Length: 166
Image 1 (cartoon, rainbow, N blue to C red):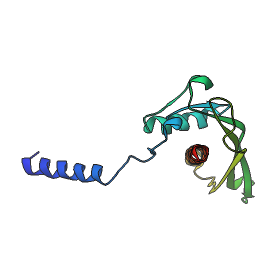
Image 2 (image 1 turned 45 degrees about the vertical axis):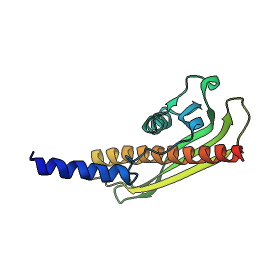
Image 3 (image 1 turned 90 degrees about the horizontal axis):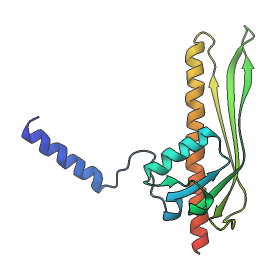
Image 4 (image 1 turned 90 degrees about the vertical axis):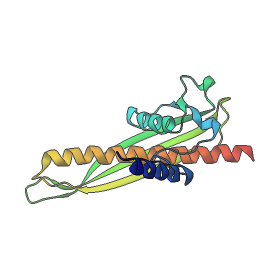
């Protein structure tokens, strides 16, 4: 690399950091959310929450007593439903429905907000000529559902903390 290209690269990186650029998924969390305990979550939701919390320099606590906040998952369900059937008798359109009901507590088991619900739905075309590709697409879509649910869960927990301070 030439000296001029190094200087341009350093200046570009300086501008990126100065403008508040963050990697996707990293968010600024209050201190209470940087150490949270997640109770009753599926492994998919737990892994997405772990990625999000670690991206914000936080961690998932090993017990509710060690946490700044506790998120208790009351019900979580991902369902697959066939929307239409093609001429071959196989599904041609599929819907994934995700339901999440939870409550946010402080580490003293005091509820910070009423029970909350998150519902997400995604539809996709299920081309029977590319069965393997469609199985992969369904996995990618379900992973995106869990990512979005984790972001929404953190946003609502953040609101609960802000309301507690008032």
